[in-house]
Image (cartoon, rainbow, N blue to C red; front, side):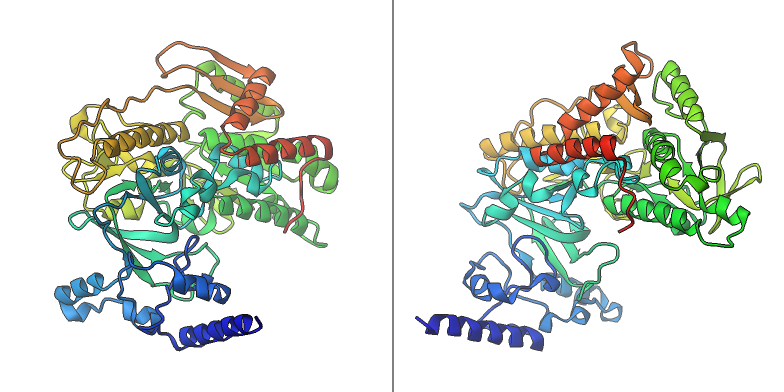
Length: 541
């Protein structure tokens, strides 16, 4: 009985030495990436050596990068196009599905659209492979609340494997921590490379692989629009991801503490404590409201000596909340002004390290700059050789399928109707993306039941009803237990519009029920209660 632990330790030691030498022997082939959470060598665990060796690897391509060397993954330009193609051919990855196996759906992205799609897919009909540099979904409507400590960050982040448990339980379904770099629609393959978070180092940053698909769903999202303004990416902070909210919170609290430094000039203290928000959409307005709440309820009591210095400015080129009812816009302007938010109408022309310049030449010093001016296509979407919509997104037809391309669909902020459909562009909203994901999951399940799940098998299948989006209304919080609720289906139509405390209660109730899991609903409810009783968390961790 004592020999078994000893043999395992010997086996682990042997595996450790083999990996350190940078190769896997033919007799003991070791997967170069982990089973569920990542495709990077950095997550290798020697305690699982025996499990990994016994794992069924027959579906993986048997060619691996030579000695796991990232340099071996580079495609030398001087060798020509033919050598580059050969290099792509030898990439490791998932082979095409075989007859008798379930069809494989590859989902690029973990946003609202991709996660709602995966939640609705029938895993008895499909294997699911999700590829994304982010292993969680962000509940974006409540993201602004995390910037000032109203909510904790974990309350708005839902792990993907909780949304679709098959990613961790099904033997042929995976979540791969990676970013897709290109798509070959002729071969039904996507090419990816390992990814990490913003400040994480990956041992093999160019380590790449490929995945064959039967159905490809591109839900890669969008990126913040900067309009080519110099200095925005270098000096402003966006509000799209959890790490953006973390950066805002750390910067805000740092400036509050730096303002205590003895001998600091009055002008410098005023600049440090000037928070500027660019963009008067729902995100910019909600963040300004949360920030003004934080200042009035927490900063004034815990940093009483700076209350005459700290200010919030909201800059918008046109009307704030332009998609809302006129009466609601006027209410928001009045409420924000009373809360101490300075509203400025102007266009930013340049952003410097400590100030921004408007189109009229005026300069606005800042200590914290948050940029929220809408979204546009990512470089990945722009570089895809696929039809495009008038706005530069991936073009789709009435069934969210990419025209003239087999087995490829696009949903969410990265997708838009092609001009030939005659449909207006859809707004980049969470409810649009969620509705598209739900619709496409039903469509794919129906195709699989009709025998159209495999690659190239759906050409003669009926896709069913077209996707039709009906706007359910808009909501926005403006701080101090006040919110706006606009239930009109369009700007021109009539409907219920209300503002005030009742609207705030509706806003909170609606979003609490929309949080993905009961676990996070509990977190959100507890955070709200804790903040109400004890105030916001102002620790800088």
